[in-house]
Image 1 (cartoon, rainbow, N blue to C red):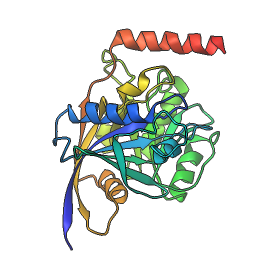
Image 2 (image 1 turned 135 degrees about the vertical axis):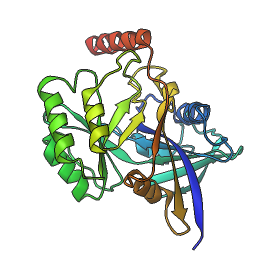
Image 3 (image 1 turned 120 degrees about the horizontal axis):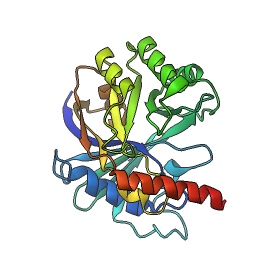
Image 4 (image 1 turned 135 degrees about the horizontal axis):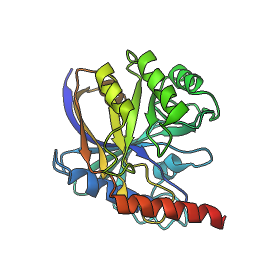
Length: 275
C-alpha cells in the first residue's frame, strides 16, 4: 500500500466567531503559516483545529463556506475538495491545501479551558477537569488543556500540574500554548513539567472575539511530518502522528507583543462593559 508524506503546518486553537470572515481567516492562515518555514504553499498542507465555544457554530460556517446564501464570503478563492462530519478540506488554485477539523472549547467547573477534537458528539461544559477529559476520551477524541491568562495560577495551576503527573502516559491528552501569551511571559512551570514527563505541547493563536483578530490565525502553531496510508483520512493520520511520541513536533511562529496583549485585554473589558 502506497503512502503519502505529509508536511503539516497547524494552528491548534482557532475560533470562528459570528462576526469572523471565513475567507479572511483562511487567507490569513495560509499566509501566516507558510511564511514560517517548511514546505512551499503549493506543496504543503495547513491545518486548523477549530474549537467552538458553547453556542458558537464556527466549524459549520467553515464547512459551508462559499455556499451560505447571502454571505459576504460567497465569492471565495477556496474550492472544497472533500468533507465529512469531522473535517473539511479546501484548496486554492495555487495548490495550497487547508484542512479544518471540528472541535469544541469546553470550560470546566474549575474555569479551565479544554479543547476537544476528533469526535462527533457535542459534549457539555461545566464538568470537572477529570470528567471532561474522560468524556472526550469516551467519545473517541483527544484533549488539549489550553493556557489562558491567569488560569494556570494558584489552585487551578496546581490542578493542571496534578493532571500532568496523573496523565503523563496518556497520548490523547496534551497541553496547548497560546499565541496570546506575550513574548516576555517566558516561564510557564506546567509546560516545563510536561516536557519532562513526555507530554505533548501544541500551539495555536486563540483569536479573541475582537475585530481583526482573525488575521492572527496561523501566526503561532506547530509543524509535524508523518506518513499517511492511501486509505487513511488526513484527519486520522494527523491525530495518529500527534499521539506518536516518536514523531517530533516543532513549534513555529511568534507570540503576541506586550503592547498588543495589553490593548486586547483593555478592549475585551470595554466590550464586556458595553454589554
